[in-house]
Length: 112
Length: 112
Image 1 (cartoon, rainbow over the protein chains, first blue to last red):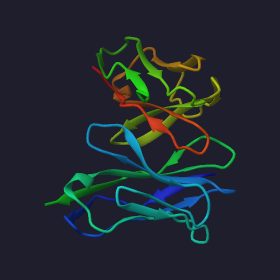
Image 2 (tube, chains in turn green, cyan):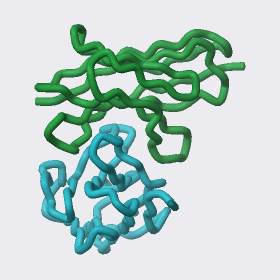
Image 3 (cartoon, rainbow over the protein chains, first blue to last red):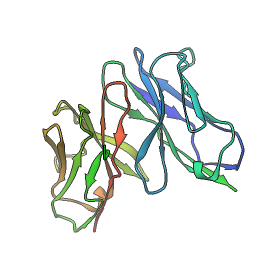
């Protein structure tokens, strides 16, 4: 079946540090891949997406590249801010379905 | 667009009572999802609809849970009777092919 595995947290960083959150997936065909962010007390927001191999999604300084050869979609940001403190979810949607499968989420805390 | 609208935002009820959660998806989105989020289990997909038809309800915990989508602009998730272990944040999300799901703000349910 389809599944997503992301690195366990929590992750604690200092401001301006480099952030990487690993995400790997298992799926048949060519799924679409997503990163969602959930700020404290809020719902999930779509952060970025990629719909085919080698696509790079980017938003708010975050980037992730769809790597089919390694079945990965790692999230990166070069210089984090306190406001980036949140829970980050990796997700996939199969190419023949709308159903989203989410990873367990990674809690990121950025300290000033 | 006002985004996905959920009501109520908070619900406190006593064990055994019926609870109805409501969702208005984004106009034009043809898929709708109900998720439950808890600290212990993370984000769980309960059911999803495509063009108002339930496609996959394998995540519905038990017969106490039911969901309907009578038209493209409205869905309900009902729990009858409610139990303390149903306490969670329930999210509704809607999507359009390839766009990723847009989540509502959630309903925080507390069953005493």
